[in-house]
Amino acid sequence: METIIPKTSTVLKALFTADVTTIWRNRRAAMIAIIIPVIILVTSKGMISMQGGPYTLANSLGYGLIAIGLMGYSNSLARDRDKGIFQRLRVAPVPTWAIMMSRLAVQLMMILIVTTAIFIVGYDYDKIILTPEGYGVTYFTAIIGGAVYLALGQVIVGLTKNAETVNATSRLVFLCFVVIGTLASIPGLLPQSISDIMQWSPYGTVKTIMAAGMVPGSWNMADTKALLVTVGYTLLFASVGIKNFKWDTK
Image (cartoon, rainbow, N blue to C red; front, side, top):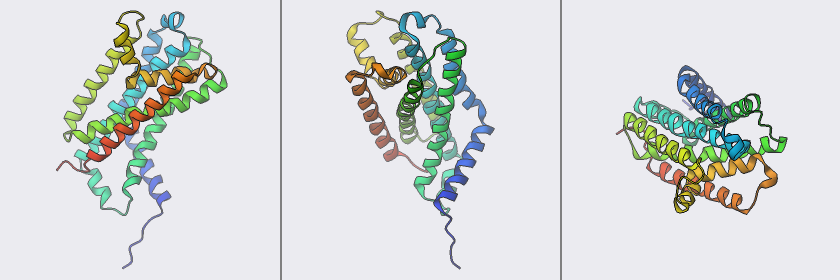
């Protein structure tokens, strides 16, 4: 009997629908990814006069991207792997890349939702208004920045088999980024050498390109370097995470 292989587009649509349904059923994690940056933005109103609106928006949005990559994506992969979902999908006539592409497409959707929520709250509560170009470029830089944390989440899942350990590790790394962000947002608190290191960390470069993207006219060579470094972090983390990823817990 001839095996009927479904079209790739049909497979992707079915996987994407299933992944969206899963997120909806476990929407608490998705809501956390939205609420965390919104709360940070609302409580950071005083930073606008010191650092400017774009910096404040970028700082808040950065936490949302971290939450998506570390609290959402990595835990979702670990949970499904632990339940044997990936094993069942791999025996079906489904391309391996399609399975991961569907997961990434859902996370891309979450990045766009979180970015939009930050724009709405920033405009309504803080009266921060960007140009149309600023909004458009920020969506692009948010996707680039989000890719860094998705790739980092892939590293955590790749190097850790146990779902509980992945959850604990993700929370610890998230806390480290929170500390870095908090310290970096206070001018003059840290020595210049430490500030430079933080500026070129994944958190620092992502925040730089997002803040610059909100005011495209201010984009300079330093911002271009931050963009290149951000892409470099993504490629590095993705290569390590994909290389070490196991489809089952054995």
